[in-house]
Image (tube, rainbow, N blue to C red; front, top):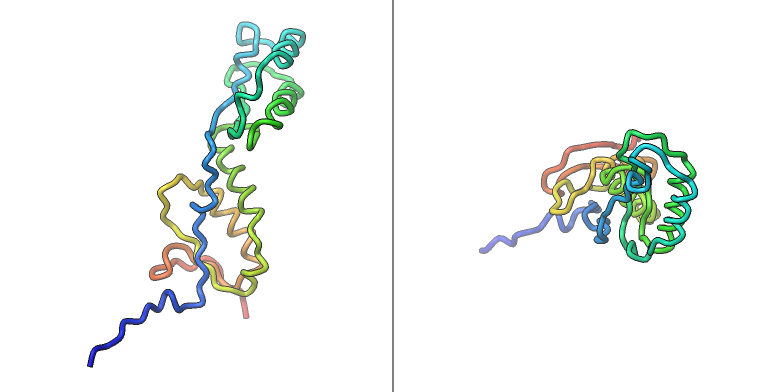
Length: 169
């Protein structure tokens, strides 16, 4: 008599979350305010406002933009705000900081949209391997969001997990 192979993982009550599925495919770019500084030292308000008014911001359509200033200069906060206000109607995401901070912001936004109602008191496995770059901050954010809701959080693959959190009985 032949034994039937049973897929215990498929039949388990585990819910698997793959953060790679929340990766935004849009291009990531940096807008460096250094290009707007006079001799990479100071921001001339009149020149800067003229540039902001005349620049074609539609070139950032659907892109994810990190605004920075790599020059060792004091740039007023309103300058970053002005650039953000011009990028926002065109770009998918605008944030202040590095490309790594932009990636974290993209994942934070995606994770905020996860419907946790269906995860209430469930056992969740957060997939550990991915082909796309998933920042550690995304795993931390997901843990923060799930902990008050789920029964348990595990990391890895359903067949081989590392326990992260278990709700007390």
